[in-house]
Image (cartoon, rainbow, N blue to C red):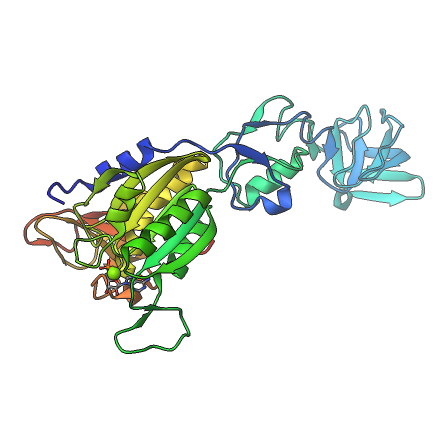
Length: 402
Ligand code: AMP
Ligand code: MG
């Protein structure tokens, strides 16, 4: 691991290996969190016809007056009668306005008696929504790569798209290595710990739009490690192995990857935590597989997933890069690392002059609770001394939830 590369260079090498996945039609009710796989245009204007924005009376003149009510147009039930000088048509919000309408007088500004109505004066076009005001037929409303959040689903539904084309979810296999690992809730023997990486990485996978197809725990044994990775390579678009990727006598991941023909693209990033991160590519009959060897320490595994695997999962879905990088004012000094950039888990607060950050506390790579409530990673550049309070620091925003 002689030549450590920068975070940005590592990410560049990862993205260079991504080949976006194919698209599939997904029913709207299952499409939340997916990435749109093709541009969407509306076949019709939205709204599709001129509509009333209020309950009231459609009129053919802007003057106040006493008018004969000649019909009613309700939402979903248009009125076949046109409105002319001296007449009015009762309209509901969302109803098609009758031919001849110049404005709608809201019901609060009218007084009806029998078949006639007194209306106040009104501005031309008042309370009228014209066809196509929201979306014009034939014009794109959303581009491929757009994240399908609740608003996007609403817009798709509003233009009549029932099953948008979405990029396939990347299939992700997660393997945790280590003789010491016990499933959460299992009996701890001497020297054993509960395994936290698979569940945390599975959560990050879901947040990034991936689908976990396999999780496994692998003992520190060369044959078992090779078998587990070989199996994962057959199932997944992305394989993340945690632990066993350093240079210890019982670290077998790199050896197994080499035997399986996974081509190394980097090993070692100038990053704390996360130095022994490995990345490579395997070609398989089912397609290309991206393989991440993440350090075993729980914080290192989560940080390196965020910085390297997450961008790969997003790019596999053709997602538009979201502005994850930002900056904020540091509210406390942070000691720099002489040789490596640090990813410091931070909490954000909105102050009168913008965003500020403080560290979540002790930052050891085994201190899993330092990830709790973290909004962002502050990237403290390598160097001597402290990054002083009051300086601006680059941030990588973290996802919360799915
Ligand atoms: P390694 O990268 O295998 O040398 O592991 C580094 C540290 O991370 C060791 O203290 C391991 O016990 C710990 N570790 C590895 N895998 C896990 C896991 N799945 N859950 C919790 N800790 C782990
Ligand atoms: Mg280990």
